[in-house]
Each structure stands twice: as structure tokens, then as C-alpha cells.
Length: 181
Image (tube, rainbow, N blue to C red; front, top):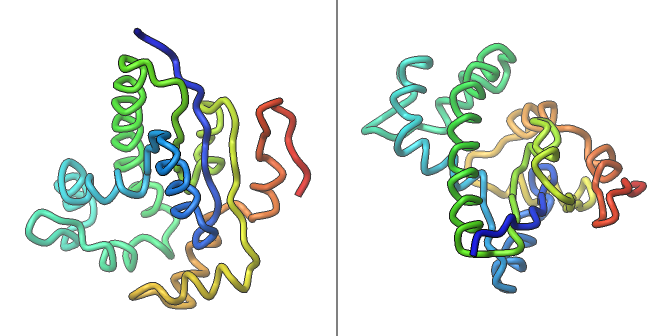
């Protein structure tokens, strides 16, 4: 039975707890599309030759070296836009396949775990949006504990992301009215 699932967007800035929240949905039996995992798969597959062509020397043995690529693009807005023009359409195609399969299966609820949901206007594809948030201190502690993460890299990532308070303001409960931060 073909059904259009209710699409719940799940977002939040780096280190806010999206992975944990997505895990709760999975435990409840709700299918979750994880944009970060899609990017990781694409970096080992379809995106790697395209990225190597645009950013030579960033792919080794068919896989994008995320650290090398980050050094090339994080501080360069034009380079970041070029990378996004390669990766975002591929991720969207993966998302469409995910939703199409769920629709064909008759699934009624799906979660799109997309870190840059608002930044890419992805909320337009969702019926409601949940924003995961934590204190700035907790966020920094979580992120800086990641292998290879530095203060400089964290700051570069945060500059690209919409501020947490703005994301919380834009979150929509099922009634469609934005909540206050």
C-alpha cells in the first residue's frame, strides 16, 4: 500500500545529541535517514571521484580523506560551496530513495536526521522539525573529545551552522507553529 509518510526533520548543531535522539527513534521502530552516514557512504563511493576532480589529493584508495578535505574547505567559503554542490545533490538523491522505499512499504513515519537542515532549507521537505540542543559547554566538551577535532576546526564548523537559539526558534511542533527558544 503506497503511503506518504509523515516526515519528521531532526536537526541540531554539532555535538548536540542528534545521534542519541535518532537512536531513540530507531529503538521505537521508526526508520531514520542519517545524512552524515549517507555522506560517509558517498565519500567511499560515488562522491569520491567527483571530489578528487575538484580537490586533487583528497582521495586515497577510492575514499575521501575527511581531514585533508576539511583542511582544504573549512576556511574557504568558495571551496565549501563547491564541495556542497557535489555532495548535497547526491545526499538528496539517497534521501529520495529512502523515502520512496518507505512509501512503497506503507510506512507512516520517517525521520530525516540532517545536521544542516535549516541551513539548506530542508525544513520545506518536512512535516515537522525537532531540534536537539545542549548547553554550549556540553557541546564543546562532546565535540572536542572527538578524534582529530581542534578548537579551530570546531569554530569553523560553528561559523557555518545557524546559531542554536535560531534553530530552536524555527523548530515546529506538529501544529506547525514555531516554538520560542
